[in-house]
Image (cartoon, rainbow, N blue to C red; front, side, top):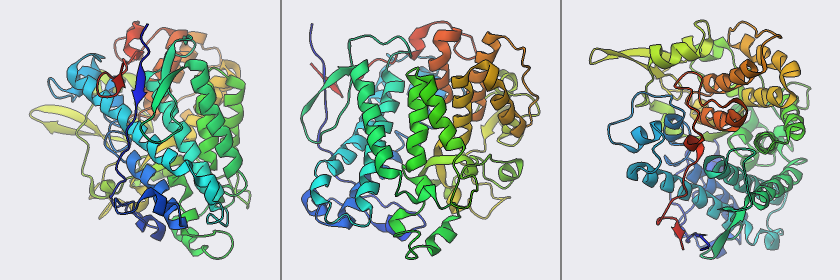
Length: 479
C-alpha cells in the first residue's frame, strides 16, 4: 500500500498590518526581516508570534470560512449559497465537488501556514532565552505551543474520524518542524498524544505568568497598568485576543470531550468557569440582553479566546442569510434572545431573508462598531458550560443547561426528559448558541454516534458520510 505524505513548503513572512488598540500590535512581520535576524531581538520574536495571529485572520480561517461561511454551510445554517459554488456544494455535503474540494484544500493549507509560523518561532527559542527576559520566554513559547495544538485539533475535528471510530490507519500529519521536510501522517492515538503534549506544555508555561489569571479590567484600564509591575509591557495586554492561560484550559476541555475523556473535560471546563481574578471577581460572565441591545452581539464578557478582526469596524452585513420559517423558527423558541436580538429580517426581491447581527456595524446604534468588539470569538464561556453539562451527564447536566437557557429567556428542561431528548437538546443548544460561530457542525459530528441524527431542525439525515471530509488531493498531498 502506498504511503501518503503531507508536504509543507516555506511560506513567505507576512507583511500585513495588524491594527489594534495597543502599541505592541504595531510591530509588523516583514519580508525584509530574515528569521535569523528576528531571533536576535525580543521584538523579532514578538513579530513572529503576531504573524501567526495575522494568519488566523485570513478569510480562509476565522476571518470567514471557519466562523460564518464554509463551516456554517456544512451545518446547513444558511439559505444563501450561490448556484454552482463551493458553498452550495458544502451545504449539501458534496465534498467531491471541484469548487468545494479546492476551498477545503485551501483551508487546510491555511491552518498549516499558521502552524509553520509557530514552528518557525519555536525552532530555536530555547537557544535565545537570554533575550526573552521578564517572562517573555514563557509567554511567547506558551502561546506558540498552544496555537499549534489548537490548529491541529481543528484539523482533527474537520478531517478526522467521528469520535469513537478511529482506527490505526495513518490520519493526519502533526507538524512540529519548519521547512520542506516530509511529514508522515500519524495514526489517531499518536496524533492526539501530540495535541495533549503541546497543551500540557503550554499550560505549564502560562500558568504562573499570564496576567489574565490576575487582572480583569477593560483594555483602557489595562494599558494604564503597564509599567506598574502588574502588567510587564504592552505585549502582555489584551490577553483574550491571544492564546492565554484560560484559552489553554478551555481548549483542553474541548479536546478531552472530543476524545471521550469526560472526567478531564469536566475538570478543565470547571476551571475556566470558576476562574477568579485577584479580587475574587469572576473573570468570565454571561453576556446579557443589555449587551445585545448595545451591539455586543458575540457577548464579549464570555470571550475566553477571540481573534481581532479590524475589518468589522464598519462591516454593514454578511452575505449569508437563513430562512426564518424553515430553519430558525424550528430551532429557536419564540422568546429566545438569540433569535429576537441577534437576527433581523430584510425584504429582497419580494422575499424576506433573515440575517445575523453578529459581526455587524449598526449605524442607528453606534457611529462605528466599538473597536473592542471587532473580534470573532473562538472560545466562549457558554461552550464551557455545555461541555461541563455533557461531560457530567443528564442527571447533573440539566441544571447547567437550564442555567444557560435562563440567560437566553428559555423555559427549563424537565428533569424527566429522555436520554435521547437530552442529547438532542445539547446539539440544538450548540446550534443556537454558536450560530455563525462555527461550532454547530462539530457538535453534531461529536454526538452523532450516540444520537444518529445530523441536525434536528433540518433533514435528520443518518448518513455518517456528511462528517467524512476527504483529504485534499494534489494541492496538499503527494504520493
